[in-house]
Amino acid sequence: MNEPSTIGRVRPLRRAAPWFVAGLLLATIGLPAAAGAFGHVPGAPEVGHARPMTMTNVTLNMTDTPRFAPQFVSAPAGTTARFHLVNQGAFPHTFTLLAQPGVRLNSSWTPGEIDHYFAVNGSLANVSVAAGSQANATVAFNASTAFDSFEFVSMTPYQFQAGMFGLVNLTTTAPGLTGSENTTDSYAFVPAILSASSAHYPFNLDVLVTNLGDLSHTFTLVGQTNVTLTPASYPAYLLQNPPIANANVPGGPGSTVWANFTVPGPGIYQYFCTVSGHFQNGMTGFLYVGVPPPPLPAPPSTAIIEGWVLIGSGVLLGIGVLAAAASAYIGRFPPQARGSSEHH
Image (cartoon, rainbow, N blue to C red; front, side):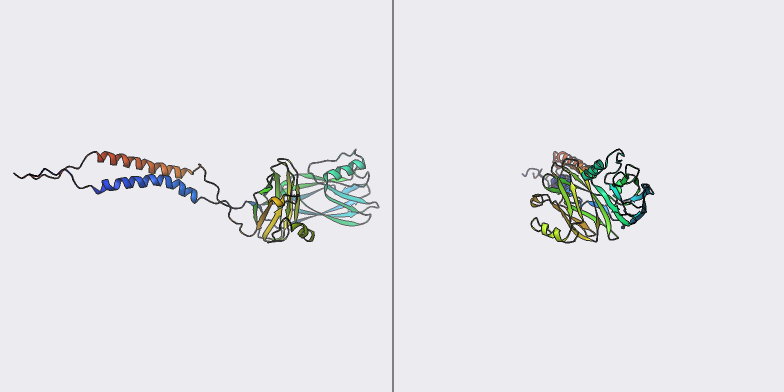
């Protein structure tokens, strides 16, 4: 006599359920990983938008009163101003433009104190004009100085004290000027790759260089494209080819300086620090103008995942848990025997 058969055929759904659950659980892990692998790789920062070279012409008459006429002139920020200086008198005069906006010299200062001020602080222009002569002074005003005022004076003794001074008032900001670079005590520019683009050449470009450390540096930019210098070759090269920018970055965290220069055309321009030992330790970078910069390496993975990735992973994980529970529940009940056969 044969016993009734209680072992049925395994259902395909029960056989596939563990693999289905495993696939869902793997997907909850793989989705965030894939999202990180295919994230956007950052490009080189755009240091500035190109703008056509613009020129503002200003005529200043110098008189023996002594006065500048007109005494107050204006120019758009972000442009280059050309001051045409006409000495209408019988005495020499100077056109000396302060380097710092918003500063007014004290008319009670002696000529020696005036000379000392400019020796310490410098000037944007300092042109002497002989009696009956004419001269020109060209000054590039950074767009960041919009609505600022720069004082100009005559340094001929006692002319400033007698009233020979004036103001250049900057009225508007030229469009498209943004840019920054940082220097560090680890002998590095951060970032070391900058980019800019233009539909017109030449164009003005201004970069605000901020010191993040204590050491002083320079931001020195060569004027020729596709030239790669080394610490050994740059001194001789600069003697033959002066840089188009050479800004001294003061020491101390937070110290800033504007590097204002004219870009002659598209290409790759190298910049570096000329302070002894800094270039030798790797302090250099490249400005890509009108050409695509190389892609930057992807940043290391972090725990910050986009919201849609977390939501998708949570949904998949929930489905997997439910499927696992259903599979376990179904597995508790063996399939019912379809029939039994007995022989008497």
